[in-house]
Length: 564
RNA sequence: UGGGGCGUGGCCAAGCGGUAAGGCGCGGGACUUUGGAUCCCGUAUUCGGGGGUUCGAAUCCUCCCGCCCCAACCA
Image (cartoon, rainbow, N blue to C red):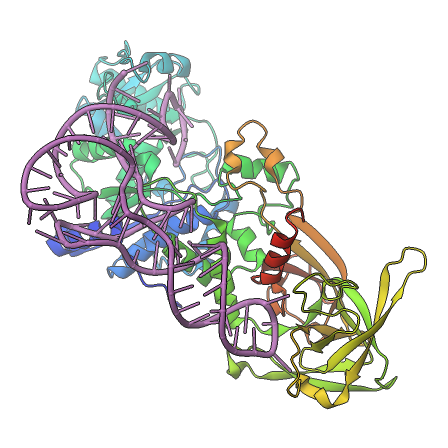
C-alpha cells in the first residue's frame, strides 16, 4: 500500500495504545476492528474511522478485523455487506482472514444471556415498548423498576427459551439486564438485551426471532475476537460503563473502548437519514452521485484512495466537535493528482479561432509534455491546424484590468504551439455575440517560443478538425452553506442549485478518444477530470470534474467585481 | 434540575509545569509555455473567563461561562 506522505501526527489514541503496548497490557498485542452495520453506504466519515481502526493496528504491528454489526435484520442486507467490503478494499485496507459477523456469535450470546439470568443479573420483562419508556424515567428523574424485575430466575429462564422458539409476539417481551433504574446514565437503567423480531436475517435466515441489541452484542463480539482496543465515536462514551459491565459480569476478555469525535465536513451532510432522503427524493442520481459524500460518490467523482487516506491523517483525531473545511479534502486530491494525472487539453465552452495567415488545409503536430511534475511520463504529439477551438473565457473583446488572455490587438501563446495576435472578431449580426475570433500567428514562434517578447498569457486549444466531443459534468459543493445542518427545518433549501452543471459539445484533444473508464486527467488550466465509470461509453464520452485547479484569476476577478 | 464529554488563530490540530508545532485557508512576493505546480514571507504576546498554587501555567487547583451527546425493543 502506498503510504501517505503526511507524517503521523500525535493523537490521544496512538498515545493510549502505545502506552498499553509499553506496559504489556493485552500481552503487548494490538487488535482493533471496524464494525459497520450493513444498513447503508459508507461515507467520508466512515473513512476516518477505517483509517483510525486499520491505521492503529498497522502502526503497532497488530491486526484489524472487519466485523459486520448485523444485529438488526430489518435494516440490513447482503447488498450493503458487499458494497462495504468493496469500499474498504478500495480505500486500501486488508482484513486478511479476519472477516466476522456479530450474527456468527448469536448462539454464544444466547448462552451468555442464560448465564446472566441464572446469576440473577438479567430478567425477562413483559412491559410493552411504551411502558418500558415510561418506566425508564427522564434525564432528571430516576426510573421505576419493572414489576417483572424480580420474578424467579426459573421463570425468566423458561420465558427466555420460549422467546427464542417464537412463542411470543414482537414487542411483548424483552430480556433486560438488571442494573440500576436510578442511574444518572440512562444506559444503565436495565438496558434491553434482546427484543423479539420475527424477521429473516440476511445471514441467519429464520433461525432466530430474538435479536441482541447493540450494547449486548458489541462488547461480547470484541471479547470473542480478542479485540484489545475497541475504537468508536463519542456518542458511545455513555455506553462504556455498560460495555464494561457486561464484560465484567461475564468475566471474559475485556477490551478497552476508546471514543473519538466523528468527522463533520463543511458544505455537505453526513446524516444517513438526509443522504437517504436525497437519494429517494431524486435530488441526486444515487448513492454514488459524484456530489455525495459517500465513498462510492467520491470514487466515481475521481478521488483516489490515497488522497482520502491523506485527508484522514491530516484532519487528526481528537475529542472536540469539529467542522473540517471541505477545502482541505480538495487540497488533498489536487496534491495527489498533480503528481500523477497526465495533462491534456480540452475546451469546455468552445469558441472558434481562425488563424488567418495559416495555410488552409494544412496541418502539423506539436509536442506536448504529459506531466511537468514527472518527466518519466513522456510527451505526446497534438495536431494543430488553421481552425481551433479555444475557451470562451480566454477571449474578451474589452479586457478587464490584469486580463492576460486574448483580446483585440493582444498577443497570447497557444500552449505548445505558436504566439498569436488577435486581429478581429466575427459577430452574430442579430445578437452581437462574438462567434469567431480571428488572429495571425508568428511562424517563428513554433513550440511557443516567445523569442524575448513578453507574452503574459498562455491558453489551451484543440484543433477543430481533430476534436473529440464529450459531455463534461462540473460539480460543486452539494450545499451552498458551510453548515447545512443548521437548517433543520428546511435543510434542502440549503442545497446548492448549481452543484451540477452539464456541458455538452466539449472539444477534447484526440488523444482522449479511447480514454478508459475511471481514468484521471488534468485538463490544463481547468482541473482534474475522470471518465465516468457508469454512463461513459466510447461513442459518448462523459467526464466528471473531480476538482478544479486553484484559480487565481477567478479570485482577482471576484474581488474586482464583488457582485460577480 | 441528572449523567457523560469538549472548549488553543477563519477551519482542523500539536502541546502532558519551562515560556504557543504543523496543515488547510487567507494576504504578499519570487518563478513560470498550466493566472497550475514550486519556493519564500506574513497571519495567536496568547490558549472560553475569573481567582489561586508556582521562580515560572495552555498545561496543576478552584469557581464560572459556553457548546455537544444521552430518555429506540437503532447502531
